[in-house]
Image 1 (tube, rainbow, N blue to C red):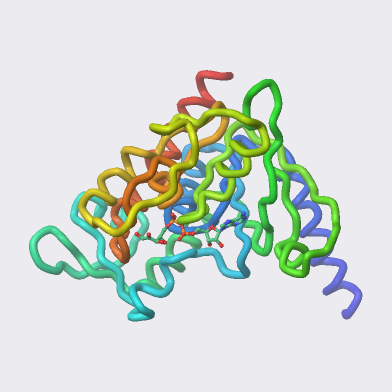
Image 2 (cartoon, helix red, strand yellow):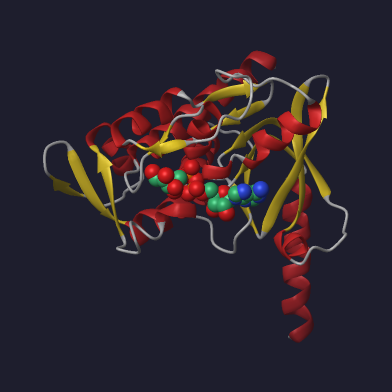
Length: 258
Ligand code: 48F
C-alpha cells in the first residue's frame, strides 16, 4: 500500500505536468482575475493552466479587508457571481457583499472544474521570448526561489501568457527590462500603480486589461499597475470583469492565429 500511494502521486503528477508543457494560455498568478480568466478560457475549450507561487491560489481575495473576510462587488459584475454560483447579499445602491472564503474557494473550484489546471507552489521567473513575442513561461518551484537555490527552471510553451500577478506586475517588469522592449502603456514602460481611488481604479482595471506586448496580456491589479492607474481596495467587480475580458481577448487572438 505504501508503494502504491507514492507511485500514484508521482505517476499522475508527472503525467499532468507533461500534458501541460504546451498550452493555449498560461496564466501567472491565481488571484481573482487570473482564476476568472482560467474559468472562461477552459469553458471556451482552451487548454489553460494557471501557475501560482503560494500553496493556496486566491491571492488577495481570501482576506477581505483587514482580515474582515467579506468583500464588496458592484452590480455590473454580479452576473459573474451568479454564473459561478457564488452567494451574495444586496448592500446599498448597486452593491452586494460576499463571503470572501466562499467566493475564493468557488473561483478555484469552478476554474478547475471547467478544465483549467492549477499548479501551485510554482514561481514564474521568466518568459520564453521568441520572434519579438512572448511564447511561454520559465518556471521553478517557489521554495527554490525562497531559499535562493541555484537551480535551473523548466519551460512551459503557450500561445498566450496572461500576467495576473497583482500589484507588482513582476512579469511585465522583467520582460521589459530583459528585452529592452516597449509595452503598450502610456509611457511604454511599467508605470506602477497609483494610490487608492475606488471608482477610477475599478473602471480602469477593465480598460487596462489588454495585450501589452505580442503574446503578453495583463489582468486585474497588474493591468492597472503596468498602466499607472489606481488601486481600489476590497471591491472585486473590476477583477472579475477583467478576468473575463482577458479570456475573451486571448481566445479571439488564438482564433486569429490558427
Ligand atoms: O493580487 P492578486 O489577488 O491578483 P488580482 O487578480 O487581484 C487583486 C485583488 O486581490 C486585490 C485588489 C482588489 O480590488 O486590489 O489586491 O490582480 O493575486 C496575484 C497572485 O499572483 C501570485 C501571488 O502569489 C498572488 O496569489 N504571483 C505573483 N507573482 C507571481 C505569482 C509569480 N511570479 N509566479 C507565480 N505566482
